[in-house]
Picture 1 (cartoon, rainbow, N blue to C red):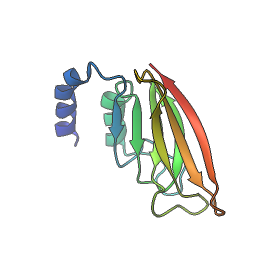
Picture 2 (cartoon, helix red, strand yellow):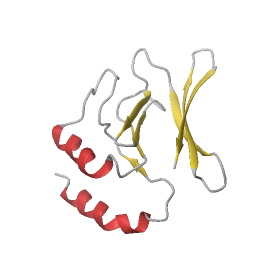
Picture 3 (tube, rainbow, N blue to C red):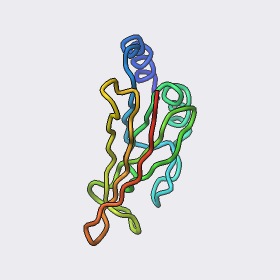
Picture 4 (spheres, rainbow, N blue to C red):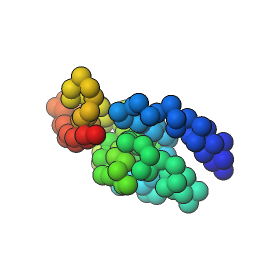
Length: 130
């Protein structure tokens, strides 16, 4: 169960008050369009719904061997960055970057980058502003 993680998150929240953006990193995604793991377990889904979605700005996961932008849920941007090593059949290797748009870091651009068989890099950008 996620009792320890839930308690830890509750205790850490006061330290985040001055942060422009808060990122959650996890192994398993909430859901995926990849071939191996389409949805999280009920227990993990409940944890994300209760403690991550709407609290964190980004949920960046792996497990599924794809690079995938999944949109937003309750204001939390969901992305899978699991294609740095082995890649799922029919998908391209790639990675995700986050880049601040100004010194105050009030705007971020998340980019999903996939690498084609010919070495070209395909970039898709998603702006997030606070």
